Image 1 (spheres, rainbow over the protein chains, first blue to last red):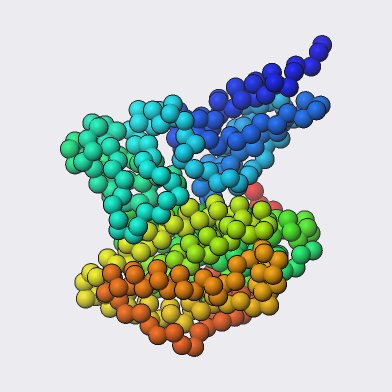
Image 2 (image 1 turned 180 degrees about the vertical axis):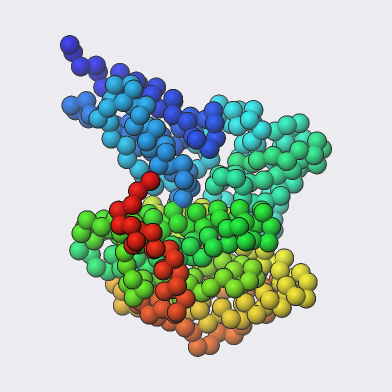
Length: 168
Length: 250
């Protein structure tokens, strides 16, 4: 049987990667999060998937790497290699519009503003709209939340607390 | 083996690892739940940065060690962290003051290191810079709250700054090891980070109504493996499991 063309293999690998989810943000797959960076198909059909951590110490990374290996094996690429890169550094800019919509639907406000820009100490933070009622009258409760990628906010209109996906 | 680069990476990895461990000691003990979570999150970022720097150090060394081997199977004298980060947590004021002095330095340092001629090093610095920037905002805001807070919090924050000040000089040392890497374009001259750090610190101390101590005699030695008593106790706890059960996995 003829080996499938590299383009076809690549498409099937990306397809398999969309079935891998971040264990800490249910519903979001690693492709729309920008965690899956690259699929390399070698001359002999060997497959390498390159992933990058959202935060240096993100404890989900090892689970994600294992899940990627499993998803690829299920898709017929049992020998695929999973490697890690730190460059370029992950940024919330890589979240796709679909991923942002899913975050909001889960009650997590998607990142606002320009990452990398140094917000002045005590300067005005970004206006984060409440994912429950849409109000822009919200306040930050804490810079850090239940996972490395989130901060805690509260809506002054509907009084609901909510998570905000930190902008980096 | 590139001994200079290896040693330099150990310094960065060790400082991140030891400070990360110190912060993790607050887990379950911080004054508020939000602060508990914040300190644990910063600890996690720093431990992740340590993992990356030590992993690269192991790769440069090429002796088959990995980040875990470097973290858990070296003794006090082999550690190359800044003395500042090994100091015991004492109270929340000292923890925050130490964090801010370090964060303000790390933001400047990573910003400069991100222009390293070694692409692997530059990548880790660029990654860490985003995290350090976020950490500095947190520690800076809290230093202001404490300094410009009650008489008690002000007194403790000032005492912490006074006590820690002699440990800040080490961040700007440029010994023969650093100088060699500066020549190769791998490392920034650490002395060049001082002016920008001073400006950052002066801004926040002023806002916090805290007095900036005068620069005088500075502590030194951590980067060369000469540590205080506290580091041995920290390592005894941090390294216990892999030492007692070598190769343990879960």
